[in-house]
Length: 166
Image 1 (cartoon, rainbow, N blue to C red):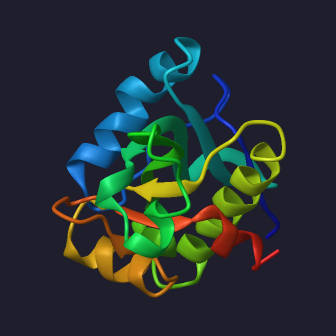
Image 2: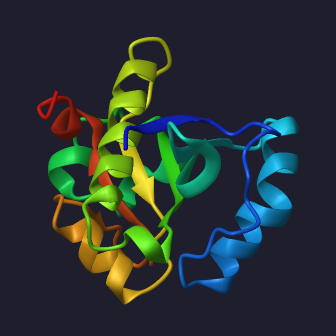
């Protein structure tokens, strides 16, 4: 089966999606389309060539980070007049239970990273911010070098670090 990651469209079948988290299931089924139409987020979905059923998804949007909340090695590169720095938020990432543990989370994460790196060629951002839903998600992101923002439940990785992957 060939997987496809594309922007969420009306044709995509959301009803059967179940990642094991009610909040993420509900978001995909009831709110994601509205958020995309209102330009609040971009939602990318994992499907397979055979059908339009969604097996995974992630969302991207713009955000910012207080520069002092980042490690000194990053914050010292930012001029003092910048109290906040531009960032990209990877707000949600989920894989259907039927595919969990098969590497699709990594596929979605790398696809998000690639899209972000491409976007930052045209729109500035210094870090990627991740909002893990639970401890298991935090551990998943830590495996890819994503660390917690000081005094926050959100995590980050410098875009310069991600660029080295590609």
